[in-house]
Length: 440
Ligand code: 5AD
Ligand code: SF4
Image (cartoon, rainbow, N blue to C red; front, side):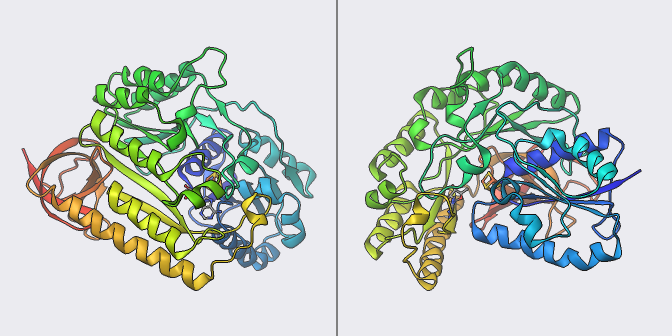
């Protein structure tokens, strides 16, 4: 029996693809290897969103050269976004890699490995095929109470900095029925929380024959008995509709958490990013969301140091952050992606300035997160328990509907509350975590 070791880089979509790939391989008789050293097949599911993510994969590939020389039968495969983007260039730079398999070929993985086994040589499998079948089999998950379900693939937005439309192709949605069936089977296996994934999930259903939308999908998934929580990511401000906010407000299972990247607070930069919205429009949406869904938590993404970003532009971003008061925000230093429109503009914000803006924005957000979390002291929050806390194995941890991490003491030393919903009274907070006591 061959063993496989798969490492995932990048976003949740990649984690979901890795699960599907592993599931297919297990179904075909592979087993999961304990580590790279003992594996017969080593796979990397890769990310191209920033240069840093690519560099990490290249460095891992370099390290494997000597290992492969010692074990000629070993198969090394690069999957996903970098595979799609770089293609055979990967073989040129790393001749010890055997297989390069793009973002729309995951379901062919067992056949591809089989072909390699019999024919040897190099195998390049990148295609722009539109249709993808979605196998249901899944490998054991670290947290069996939570699962990703990919509802659509690709993106048609073409923000000027982003590689996703090039590596993941144009948007395609899965039919509601298929998604509900997959979610049902997960719930049947004990899953309590489903995270619906799409690069631009608010346009879900746009290209399906039978017209539907995200709000209808949320309603359909909500009907599944035994399912407790539904999340969905990622929302684009341009496609955010009143319908979705109404569904969030109306459906108790849908978590009151919205991940809606703003990217910048400067209209000049937003225009160069080709985002299609202004800072004002974004802030109006935040206001509308808070009006329609009371106590909603909003998270955002920002890019600092985009070509031509001046100190004034950056100040506008700080101002937007101060006004919107996000629960949390992910902040990235701009990284030019060859082939995108922005890569043709001079990357003229010095690295030091990008670093400094990154830190300043992080500091602002940390203060806001702490202030917002402090308001929760004394409140009772509902937590879906995930397991033991990483920093203290005797304590338990889980998340609220707002996607906040909560740490608390179990009632008894060995009580197993994993997968249960419990009520916690918040006593202390940091900018990232709530701490509290279990109330029975
Ligand atoms: N450079 C830096 N950050 C980027 N992102 C996307 N493309 C780039 C890039 N070229 C960020 C955006 C997006 C998140 C997933 O990654 O903020 O929302
Ligand atoms: Fe990275 Fe984007 Fe690919 Fe996800 S889709 S792995 S974020 S490049």
